[in-house]
Image (cartoon, rainbow, N blue to C red; front, side):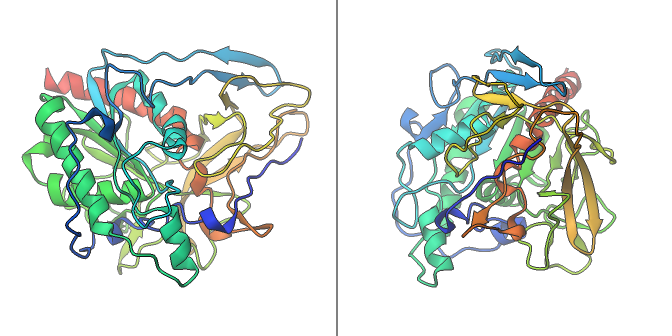
Length: 395
């Protein structure tokens, strides 16, 4: 057995800094500049829309690597007749040199769709707008003490405009799952607080998956804090609820300076809903990992998933290798990811996902780069069950 980890340059360490906290994302932002609003009736302003070939129509074929090293192929098929929709806001990935990204689709936006959103097409129609996000360049400059001018309000305004265009022209009364990660989750959290919580449109929300961010809830409760009336999900048949977690290895738990798993408000904690066991406890995580070792911001990394075996599909699944459990302790509230190591298991005993700077793991980031990948199968299964529950209730 062997270990595989992802190395990143300091320049791209900030994938979640903008919206590591949902409460931060909901805080008032400086007034946006007079930038021209995006025209979301223009097909070019969307990464994904139903009925066309775009960033979501990508190969999701997976090699299942069993505990004995045997490889089997799992095909993927989207469902163009899915009864519900998914609306996705992607995390900080833009490498544009300006503080806010442009509205051109680059390889980084395509990669994050491949990693985090395309697979949901088996359960829902897919909508993913481009937006003028805070770039990695801006975050790098801030860390270096030389802030680059960036308009945080503009990013949120774009998401609101895209959401309203979707509601007016595409929703047609359908249920919708909100999906985001990092900066995307923070923006969606603010959207829920401002535009959805306690309003008629709330009845159309199948669920909200706010991943890789700190959603505040009162300690011991499932509702309150970030949202007034939207509770945390406790079962896959529950609808109108939130799934949120941040992930850390069991061997590298949140340090004192952790960016994730804590909220500043007295008497509140960061939400943790284990997608593999929403009711609580430990359970196997159904991960879909990029076969090359690539994450949302890192390039390909040589990865041998099982000794002597070659994987040729875009993704791998490693059943039984990873286990997840929501933990709340003095370190924070987080999804603890354990590798169930077995000397007889020929598979790699560690998955790529650490943030590494100058050869040292940045423990405060946890497994932020693969928050979504590590439980992708569980999340897709939840959407399938929630879709059935929502459709049954609507009837």
